Structure formats: structure tokens, C-alpha cells
Image (tube, rainbow, N blue to C red; front, top):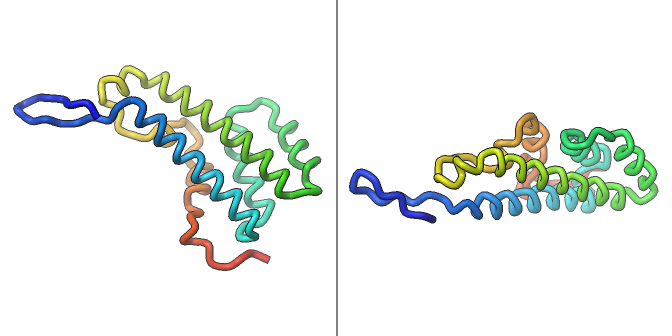
Length: 143
């Protein structure tokens, strides 16, 4: 944190790297937890696939190719979900990079007051679905 002295008060603002670390942490935990829930049978294939595709479609013009590869891998559902997980993480990294760059001046001044993930335009609904599934909410496997 960097001190910001004004009006005889010392206020700390987040270091710019904190935004990157928080984004990496949020991306990994949420995406991996979602994939793990599928592997454990807590979420079905279609629900996880559709959630990952809702993220991926925000960054690729060839979503039909991604869907086809996932379907080709469907003989091993875990492998199909792993493919979509990797694509989702890539999209979120790229989108967070864009947000960081677009808001770099605000971030460097300490005036940016939201997470990089929260600032990705048009992706909040897809991200909310992932984030609502936390381990505390998983009670019994789906059949």
C-alpha cells in the first residue's frame, strides 16, 4: 500500500500489483472450484459446460469451434471440461489485462475502487453464476 497524505490524515491505497494478484486468485479459485464440483459429481456436465462457454464467448469469434472441440472430447467429460476451463481462464486473464490497461491511470493514482473482474464489461452475469457455487453450497451430488 502506498501512503496518501492529505488533510493531516494518512490513507493507504492499494498497490497496482494487488489488482493483478486478486484477479489471478479469483480466477483460479472460482474456475477450479467449478471444475472440481463437476469432477466430484456435484454439478452436471451441461451446467458446467454452459457456464464456461458463457465466459469464452466474450472473447472468441469462433465459439462454434470451441463448442465442437468440447463435444469431440465428450467421451471423457472431465477432459472436455478441462479444455473449457483452460479456455475460460485464458479469456478472463485477457479481459483483466484489458481492464487493467484501460484503467491504468486510475489504478496508478489509487483511484480505481473495484476488482478487475468486476470491471469486465458484459460478463457479470456469467461470473456471478460461477461465484455463487462455493464449496459451502455443495451439499449432495447431482444424479
